Length: 278
Image (cartoon, rainbow, N blue to C red):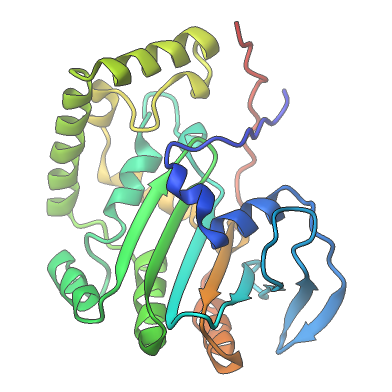
């Protein structure tokens, strides 16, 4: 049994996001890491050499295992935070294809403090945007806005990433939307051809199915499935946080403090057979 982690994405815009590029680079284990001290956490500093001309960035590992990458860019008054979680469609249990995608869609639909409307209103007031994307090997969450609202961006992002409530009403609503989207895709010749190609190439391997999953399996997803997946994989020691934009050292300390209380857990190791490509 060999663990396979090919780089593939259904959202090409992610490929050009600075934070995503750095996180992917670090996941590959290619970065050099001369150790330095940063606050009370383990820290490293790298130049980004070895791939495209990225700005210098600094990597810090918090005590809970969360890796944080800081990439300052003062050229614009903008700030983005991204969280790469090592969990995607390949982690969906048998009979629950589409679960990772379903969980990501629910993250901004209610937390332990606010409902979906309150979250949307608050993000709108500060001109911020939140998105969640899922692929075969990872989930990627991101929030972006003006650097003048850095504190609000951080507090909103921490809440959405670490305190989702998964309300019953929102689960039912999002499930209906997801099923409708899957049904519409069956009328799209390109989508049908893409799915048939994956199936022909990879067969029963997870890479042979769509990230969104088939209707019959998505329809059976329960709140228990959602909570189990979130608690199992959305952990600091299974994630990389990327901070890109205009910020100072004070904000770096705020980031470390805000995510430092996120509880780590042992992550199940997924062993995938090497796909037998035809």
